[in-house]
Structures are given as C-alpha cells and as structure tokens.
Length: 144
Image (tube, rainbow, N blue to C red; front, side, top):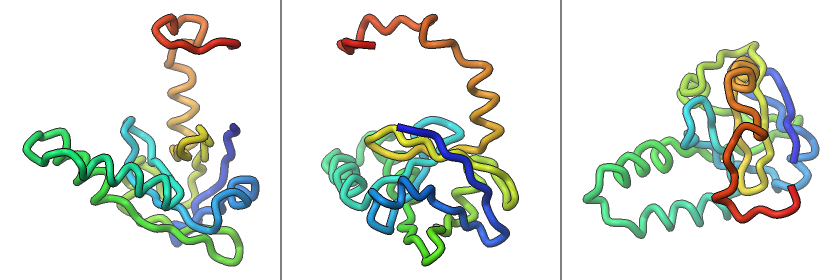
C-alpha cells in the first residue's frame, strides 16, 4: 500500500516502519526475492505457505532445487526489538548490494513486503516502462 524509506545502521539493523509494525506482529521472515535487487519479507504464516508449496514439489528439477537454496535456505526470522528495528544478516544486505548507512525501501505489495536499496529503486523507476506503456490486457483487472 505504500513505500517507506529507512537507513541501515552499522549493525545491519533497520527500523521497520510503524504502519507495517502495527500489522506484522513483531516478526518477519526475510529472504531473497524472486526479482534481482529485492529481498522479500513475509509474516511467518505467509512464509510457511510458500515453504509448503516449494516442498510439495519433487527436487529432481533444477528450478525447485534453486528455489530451495535461494528462498528457503536464505530465509531468516527477524524479530523486532523494542525500538522497532529488525536485524537482517549481512549476506542478505549484500544480496541487494546495500551497506550500513545506506537507505533502503520497504514496499508493501500486500502479499509480502519487498525490500530494495533506495538507489536501486530510483534507478529502476527511471528505466522501467510506465504502466501506460505496458500491455496489461492479459490480466483480468478491472477498475484501474
């Protein structure tokens, strides 16, 4: 529903926006996102649903093995501290190429929260086509 920007501190912690904290119950499961440049954060219930779907597939296919490694294997439970911060491991910050002192964006897309660097968000926004230029006719979305 919204985009929020906060700075990562020297210990890899970031303040979770107050509006998000209110609805999340004090914990997020953070992992690599499907799209390059993004982390994905889920409530534990949301993440368990995704985990179950991945695990219900045979591991003979490369794609499922990669999903297991990159999504399940990288997942980290991040609890909020008394100041509303969560500590994200350095390997996940490195995955989206951010360092302490840099700004990141929390993007609430309803079924998860996407996290990316502010610089990546700004660059992507400039390079991506606008919605007006996209062919959305293949999706049954009314009222836009």
